[in-house]
Length: 396
Image (cartoon, rainbow, N blue to C red; front, side, top):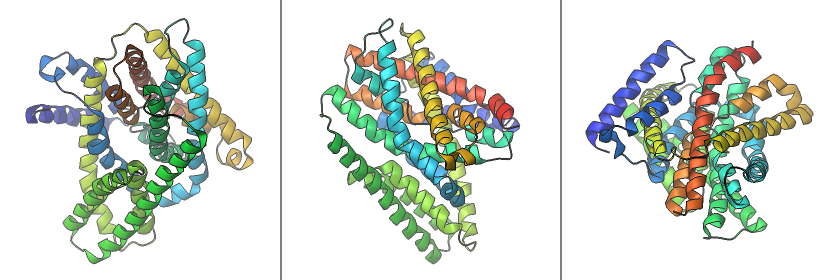
């Protein structure tokens, strides 16, 4: 991508976000992705390629760190049970149920193996509520739903990568599956990333007490977000969870004292600009990259997959929150319904799709990639547009 292309994409993002300032229910990611699809058919932009490494190592650390340190520590503690369940056991159940459903219903539409169906399901498990959280918050004074959706989306990114990597490795033949091997790797990667993030987040919270220059403190936050992400990946644990828990640890430490409020202000000023810029580029690039995979003859089945993913999530969340008395008293069926709908797919799903694309070039994987891209796009568009009216109806 050239410098002039970058500036033009940022300008487009600026104009779209300016519209969003005037209307809280404006679905910014949807508009950006659709514009990106349109840009693909303009020769000047069609040469732009979005790779999985660009998403993972450039875009994700900034987005993860920003959302994590801004997430109030008290809200995380209050909802930690349901967040942890949905981001771990909930994801595993989703992959199993959704994958089986895709395989059973695929016959009349496409030829796909059970393992291929499970790979699609693993791609569609991470949630990305970039725009829906603010919409939900504006629809009701009760921020519980937004807190659960945002908290779950932060944690399940790391979980979904582990599950996808295992299934994709089996699909491409690069590794075999063993229950104990999977659980051991899952615990090592997840707990390792979590502990590394907590440790470095705590160290940074202490370091800023000795650095009273705001610019230097912001520099330190950049080092933490990107340095920790790459350090964790280098030692074989989750960079996603490391960055997230470093941000959460910062939020927790600064919620206990007000003497570093100026540090939060400096972070908000810098990372706020970074977040908007990254989101603009990311969703425009997703649209440009997705366009080449969306011309295929199984769109009907892709829509069916999207519906199956939505129904599966609804069943798991509704049964979970209504079966256990503690959660049933905390989260009503209305809130469960909105939590289910708000779990739309986005940047992490696209990263997983491009990761699979880089690993294989078979005709079977081409169909899987197109189905996953189409289902992700359907989720992003339909669920984003439906969040505002559904929130107003259920949370009124």
